[in-house]
Length: 255
Image (tube, rainbow, N blue to C red; front, side, top):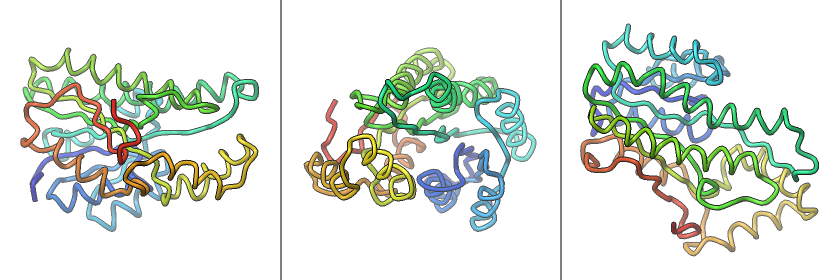
């Protein structure tokens, strides 16, 4: 119960790593609000862990503000924001129309800004707060035929560092987690293996082998790998850390 009674908002918490984060925060004693564009799935997750669900599109600043206000109305404060809402569309640049490219940027980068902007005034009044972005190894290294996602994640690290500098005097810490490939997750199994196989003209099994061969520790990144670090960054044990983008990649990325 390292996060007992913390009030936490998790965007994109309806499934995948966001769902795992919401559940882990609850296990650690936090009071969790799940914000997701897919309200029905968010409500199912929230009901299963005795949390709250809110319909929110992070590209809409007013909806982000309403999410923050609900947390404030319910609990009187906001201790932690986990910016996890994300979108991945992978295409070669000659097939990537600008609307689809911009949509990835809007969700992953502008959505991060909108969510942070909504909670920061509250945290400033509290003189304490914690913002954690779920980034990616693609925020550290370019990704061929995946330019929108990589660009959004590079931008996310820049935003993380900038906010960390701007908010340090208010005792608000801002960090990012950069996971490796979660090859067993719904995102990969239901989407990315097919996208990448099509983009590269190979089989889905060849895509799996390609990514596994790049990991010195020889395995996929699992949800627990991410949530273990997240709990540390959300706790006072990491009180001297801000502006960091911490890799959880099995050695695949070391910068």
